[in-house]
Length: 382
Image (cartoon, rainbow, N blue to C red; front, side, top):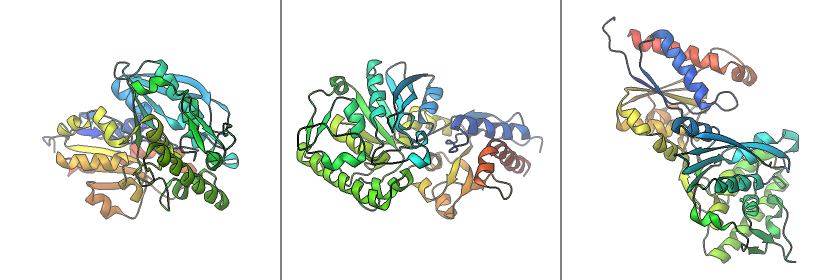
């Protein structure tokens, strides 16, 4: 046993939603490994997929700078939103949830007819003020279903009703829009590459679209769902007449309440896989080449994990380099075999007994460290 070669371990978790950032999760995993043997070589590269933690992961991983800006929140409140500068000042990264996120709105005040993305547009303008050439917009965790009209208003576009008046903010006003005035659009946007990083492939319309799939968790009632879908259909038809493009079936256009679709149509944004973009930026392939074992994870791993989530994208890449991949999660769904087929060698829940969600979140750091320690006791001693 004393002469057994110790594995080189890449620690690359996603954030554990509502409990640990990706960086905190990585440190907790590392702590468990080093408890078993402090000589095990570990490399920490926390990852993300466009959702929670994207900005933090890129700023930390690329040695960037984090900034804070005051913007309008999704229900007109004033909020302090964080964003980052990376790549030696050439690029900016924002999480739309910082300005327009669901966590900003108490459950009893959630109303996607009124919630808007205006503050996200203000964040984009702040990035333009920093003279960057590229802006990455992470779109997870939104409170909004407005097809990005709020953000576009902040950038200078006017959406007009049949009387020529500017419509109000929020998804409930989409059906009122009959014409578009982009004469005051911030022209600096034409000199910047906008990428929208998303972790879902939902289309804009229909049973798998932005409204049907995600609006209920944002407070939409059955009546609101009908109104919002009608607004999406109406506004998509207006975009088609104006620009000659149909966004209804574009994979990912339904992300963040249609924000991706709106940014594609009006400011020529490009939808990208958040996990792939971020792992490329962090040069994760080089790390995979130099490690035999990968430990990743997130709060919950299930069928949605296979649709662009960072740990699954990482496991897929790891197969190319013959790395074994261990995943840790608060909850493991019933589709384990499918996840194994995707490249996960083994999957472990971190809970060590019956506990409710509040307890699991509160103890997630210790649970993650403890389970990692037990796994590596087995790995090192067999």
